[in-house]
Length: 286
Image 1 (cartoon, rainbow, N blue to C red):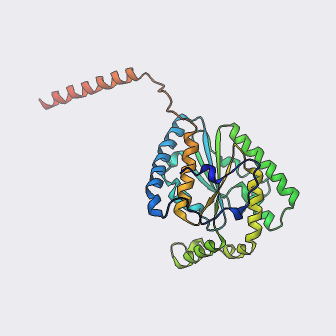
Image 2 (image 1 turned 60 degrees about the vertical axis):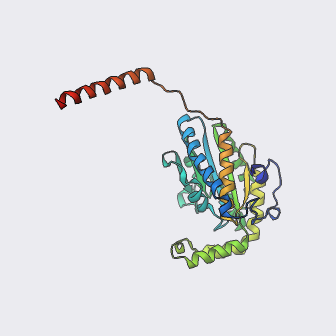
Image 3 (image 1 turned 45 degrees about the vertical axis):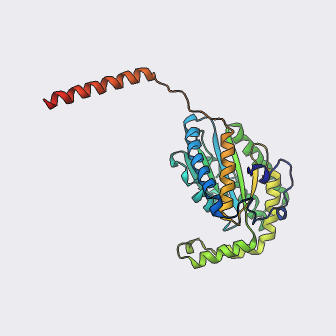
């Protein structure tokens, strides 16, 4: 089953998050049933990244957004970890620094967009600036609507320069978030992820859902589509995200560039050098 059309938010479509079941898992019954398929996509991703890097005509920008504990790090660790670091970068966008806040909200983002041949992953992104400030009433409606326009123009410019943009909202339920917070409390290896805001922000859950609905509806486009991924089941989240990325990269119809040297001449010189080396070895054996 191909999930791209199932979870894409089409241009000018109005998103209603209550219509997306965060516990959805498609036709698979368990993580074991999906394991082989996920591994296949991971293998394909590594091969397609090699093509992208060699061709150096296009680039990929993957945007990951979610509520706290929604699985952004999980996607990076379990889906995108197969990428060669030479051609892939992960950038996390937290609260703006004083210097960043003194500029327009996109100033800190542009330097981290991918060059041709690269894959860039945003773990949180420029969308934080139409979510957190809105929910906490730091900006008003005209301001966040103006930012939607700026984002659309920004992403269109990236697309015009050859960047394929894939934006994922990892949709978990409020109950699942609380379960994951409890797991962090019980696991010493994940205690470091706990912050005070994990719990204080839960009071704004409904406001965040409305903000996400508006932001996704206003900025999903043909060149920069949003996908709302059911993410209560981590394995299903990984399956769908990896499949959508693979489908998008295969559509680029990439190919390795032709060699810039005369291969027949290189082969001739290689064989000549090998012959000389063998002759030297024979003389040394006498």
